Length: 396
Ligand SMILES: Nc1ncnc2c1ncn2[C@@H]1O[C@H](COP(=O)(O)O)[C@@H](OP(=O)(O)O)[C@H]1O
Ligand SMILES: [Mg+2]
Ligand SMILES: [Mg+2]
Ligand SMILES: [Mg+2]
Image (cartoon, rainbow, N blue to C red; front, side):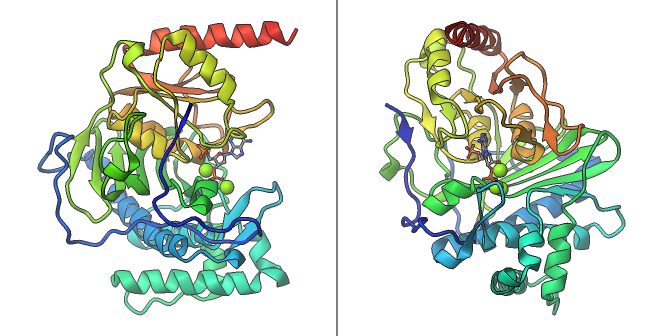
């Protein structure tokens, strides 16, 4: 039996297409301690990306504030269906517009290139005008609640422009921001996990990542947890290359350096995977886990919150095996990848190759994505290859 993690907000209706989503609350105040992780006084940032990290944290935090507001009051009219039939909400669009606006404002001396999931096509149509109006309102309300942009009021045209900044193709040279304004839109609509995921590529390598996970408990999650005992939610993970991974609450308190699980015995390990069987083959991952000797049931949650949870040692493995024909996008993994690797983990495809974020908007990889610590990776790779061979021979 799989563990399907806890509702953190009331269920919302999803039967009719509509829009809206996420945000982190990043206010100051409430203090609490996190005894499960070693506290540190200050995050050590790679000097060269300090400004970019501050801007990214601010952008993701504001985006999360918008998303939280929307998730709490989700209306049916707030969700639309994209041409690939995946859902998109006013919060996906609003989050993308906000992050784009904040990064440009905070880093005025840098060339701005953004590779992001959403585009403004549907919002420019007659049928999108009401939604566009709602997004513009949400973005302006969120900016004014933050207070540092004075009387900045964006027009609907500004919002469209900010969203369309995300059309960059990325690639192997120069700096490119990579954004998933709401990763796990289906989880967002269900009232479950979602994340705002922002990364920076520098000459094709991920050098910075921020993951805002408004519904992720601050306490560790695992197959054994009782959701009712998990307490406060809202985590912000961030990493810069060579400087480790840190987590703080979305209220800005309790900064801690995190590291992946040190488990070496697969019998003690638990693994994460997508809640949605359409996004990853649960039967294949179950066969991999069995071959490896994992005893615990899978922990199924949406979004890159899985990478965040893994980076602080909740569970030891993340397995993702999309169905044939699906191509992964860079914004679904860039931030999560650096958050886990800077916490001491390893992220590869099913052949053990590192993920290559330098080839544009898509990730080309072999079969699937596997994530674990350095000790477990060799036996995990062996189990993955055995399970894949078995599947291939059974379909001959
Ligand atoms: N058929 C498919 N196979 C694999 N991933 C898919 C998919 N359809 C959508 N996705 C991706 O899975 C992401 C969510 O991952 P997870 O299952 O870990 O929550 C989605 O991100 P968005 O919600 O940003 O669109 C989307 O990019
Ligand atoms: Mg999507
Ligand atoms: Mg996504
Ligand atoms: Mg998304």
